[in-house]
Length: 79
Image (cartoon, rainbow, N blue to C red; front, side, top):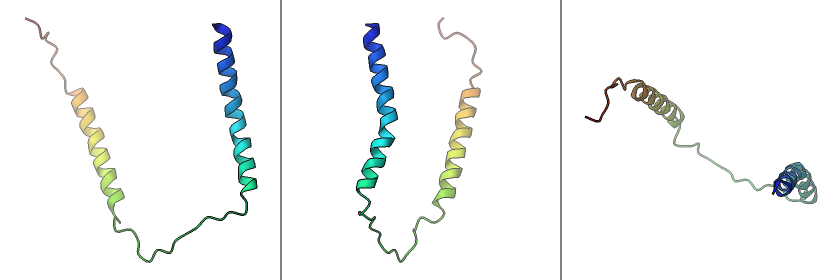
């Protein structure tokens, strides 16, 4: 049982080490392939949506803190 866990951990570590090497060799063999791009005439129509999302995220975090800290009911629920 212990040998099986050790061998699985060793295989996982070896795959993590080998992944960048395999990716690099695949990149070298595909050097003639170029990325296709498209021309965009207009910018995104969601110009200020990043600010709105940031404000909503901050409001959600503050609401979560208020809800978590607002539980002052220390009495038991059973009779």
